Image (cartoon, rainbow, N blue to C red; front, side):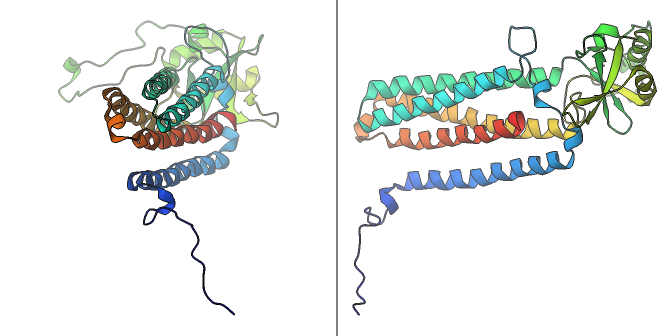
Length: 321
């Protein structure tokens, strides 16, 4: 039997696998390592959600805002953000293709549209963060960390604290430096004190409490008036919006993961915008035209496509599932 092995054209690039340059290979190594990082974060989110699935916030009730519009639009703006980012990936593909054909003007315009799409996405994400932090309705938190939200009995709609809270004169006092020599500072007080919310709730029989517990129908558990009056006695503080400690929408881990994972992805998009800007101006200056190739556009394109692909998974985990 002939043991001779025929040397086929497997690599075709000599000492460069698949004829890929060093820079392109390093970009792929970075993408693989970063993909593992995001996978670990999303896996941790998945395990946490599975553990606390009965008290996890419902995304359709959290992300309902659209800039300059009042009303309830579940997922509408998040879908718009996703569409913009995906379209920026399309323009990046066109920029890379134009670079292969040495069409400088087309590369400039397609990269410009890619950068604009990235800026819109990051700006939208910043607005979404601000809305998430500020909150819309407000809630109460019990000593055990459970969230109590309010609902209008006649319509079934969420009730904001401002709809029923009863202002009490002399109830809220902001500490000042002159109050004591050890005074350092104090966070901003909520719009209403606990007593103001409780007294307003007792005076308004149309307001009911719903807990963060999800029932068999997939909705938060709504209590009747008697149960609501008993439950509100366990409240210890007013919560407005979300931060790393408190979350008016439900379980506090949801806010922790939301800020960390979407913030980490947003940092990647912001970094991609800066890199794209550098490449964009180099294209205008004719740097790659003189080199005879637009490989830098292709390399930054790989990074941009990776960022878009990661958002598809983040979008699925946080907003759809």
